[in-house]
Length: 77
Image (cartoon, rainbow, N blue to C red; front, top):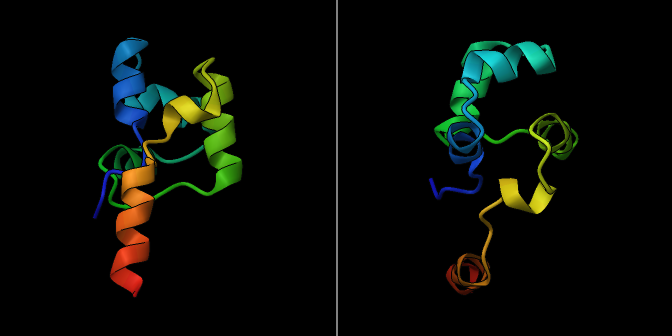
């Protein structure tokens, strides 16, 4: 799976842990770890909460680039 978010990188930059984020969001550490590994993706509402808790712009948490989107669109055709 493509790396669609950079939650783990933001956590490292902010000196925070997955457990800390899980506690702040009321989620399980297992779920947060899966988001950090890009195994699964949080929904947009949760992603917005993550951005607020980490005091970053929502766009900072995302890694969706034009090239990735173009690749997806190309693969569909």
